[in-house]
Picture (cartoon, rainbow, N blue to C red):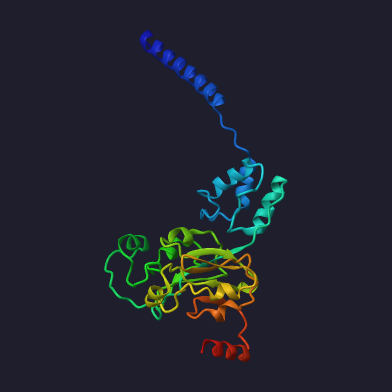
Length: 287
């Protein structure tokens, strides 16, 4: 072997050794320590990566909850109280009690109540249509029906009814992740407190127009008459911008507001049928 080749081999070997030593010290200097509890917390999460917690995924949420001193503002809606309780036990903390929620649609303007006055032949995307014009009906607040919410749902809990052209939400499958809420460009989907037996009373309308135009656009629109506000003894109903709203945290399910609504804009779900006498009294009041 010639001296030149030998010197080259030795030089390259020394250079490689020196580079390895430098890289080792750099790695030790800038080494990022990761708390092993992050992996343990992530293992307890449902791995949905839905973003309902406000973070990009379960890994990011696990990092945030381990680094945080408390659970304030941190919650996994998919896992619910059970998962948060397990995480609290692992970290030696106390998990806050949060009421389970479920998504509801604040629009009842199906094809039966809201006539189609134009035809759209563009891309079937709610956000695009919303930015282009008011939609195929005269209600600029109602559901467009092109399924952005359905495509956003990762839990098969929401589907567009082909007849009513409105999304139908399954209380059993809904995890309250909030993906459908973010997907709707008209803010028609709300996460509300989930009650026993999946009972709900809410105003299924988002039309802020005055009574006349709202009713002409949709037969079941809220007309802002305030009758429901006056009959509520629990201060659970407010009227703002010609639109009534029922606070789920204050509503006691007395159901007095439902028959008072002249347009049937207030919906009651999963309640037993009203007694015939009560129904007769309601008809007498309306007539």
